[in-house]
Image (cartoon, rainbow, N blue to C red):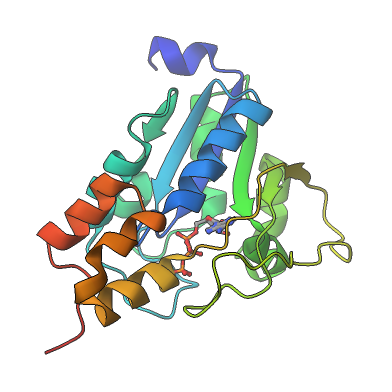
Length: 215
Ligand code: ATP
């Protein structure tokens, strides 16, 4: 155990495919750090994401882009454990490991509204709930590839019968789906990508020709 893990009292856990990481992910991480007064925030790119129908980009690219997107935030730790885990990766297992690493700490699981609404489909969700406090940022109702950036209609969370704390993040209607769609459709509009992802992530996507349509 390092000195940092020994003293951390408020530990954030933010998982995602991050394919690619975008501005809403950065805002969510920043908001969680500030509002929850986290000592440390683990960013966990998923390994084999059991709930995503699509095949994800190789982990090495997603990890590299996470480094570029989150690297400047204080107290962030890029945590690759789910990528290295054999077989399907479950949040309950990750939280158990983190509880052992930070025996004194309160764990906060950071997520967006879409994931809260689907929470009871998660494998061993009751265990997740017992291990961590859910900290949720709202999301627009339409999060598809064609969703307008300025859409202001929030998902309705009033019917959710789970305990959670709200993260007060201004609505950012960005999704990785929309980023991938924009890259694959519009080579000529490359500059427009920085509205959706940090400049360094846009540079990485272009350098490695990610999300191009099949030729
Ligand atoms: P995709 O479009 O490929 O499904 P995504 O944009 O939802 O991807 P993920 O990496 O799956 O990105 O998301 C990781 C976490 O970040 C999830 O908890 C998700 O709800 C949250 N999140 C992503 N985008 C937003 C957003 N615009 N506002 C709030 N939360 C978000």
